[in-house]
Image (tube, rainbow, N blue to C red; front, side, top):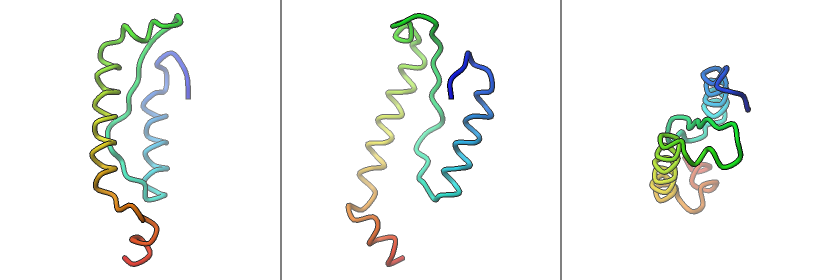
Length: 76
């Protein structure tokens, strides 16, 4: 979903609802950056920091999930 900041909350709500419905693991809040020219996104320090935090959280969660998740889920 792409735009100039319009409807971001609705888009993220839809994504989160989909993830919850399908029993996905939510790792972090949404990350949004704003840019209008190629490469300009690299100047959005908050977006870069949020993306770094998301990557760190994904790493942490991946370490918690069993390697054979499907078998683990089936036995639960």
